[in-house]
Length: 373
Image (cartoon, rainbow, N blue to C red):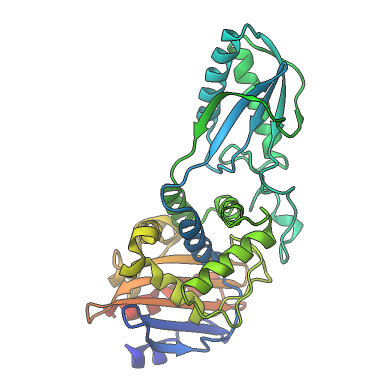
């Protein structure tokens, strides 16, 4: 494999700024490397670090709650950071809240919304304003999944108000406010477990979920729910796992930042945690969430991944996270090599080579690690 990688990395159409590493997971030994200590933009492969940190700090079964609470004629819709809250979930919450209000004899309320669990949204270092609202929404603790408006908390509250009205509750004009102490809980909605959320985030490279998880992880370590608090929490977790962090700089959870830097050395080590038996009880959702070559997620055939020879021989055999920005293409994951041992790998290209050419080259290198080519 080593000789083949040395030969193929130079003819894979990846451009000149390429870093890579392959590790034997069980031994931790590097079996192949190219500029593996050089920091490069990782794009969405950075979500692997976010996933590891969230699962380690919070646990796979962790859930958060969206609440409707009441005090003195006012209902407060309180966000818990659930980035997968659906309109159906909010409708059910409103129905339960309306029932509780009627039991109190309340048919007319003022509605406030509280998304103060997270700090007020802003741009991370290395983000440009063009990311809003399509690439990522401003990060808030209250949001309907798929909503990329500038104020997702307000949009969610307006929908909640409509549902209360449909249940016969008259609702006054809403506004943002912190929930006062002594409020009574009317109804709650519990999120999906973190394991499910992490799986979806990795499979579909969801930026909004990644940034929400970054803040929840920060809170889990007693830090501020900000970019800085979240990345500090991730760094602390990676240190715990012994990940080599020289040359690594993180400014967000999604990998959108053009100031993020990750080395192939760190990235392959992080990917290897997905199949490290020592951490299976905590980190098992990562392997389950990684896209499968030519099968699903961002490695499916709809993205033209592993669709042609020679890479097509690895269909169904490679589990890896993709990363793409306008001048970044990356692939990091795990595969069982020809010797039957788990290998973790990371290949990242920063440059202006055509994306389609680069992704085909990355797929070919992954197939080389698998051993089918």
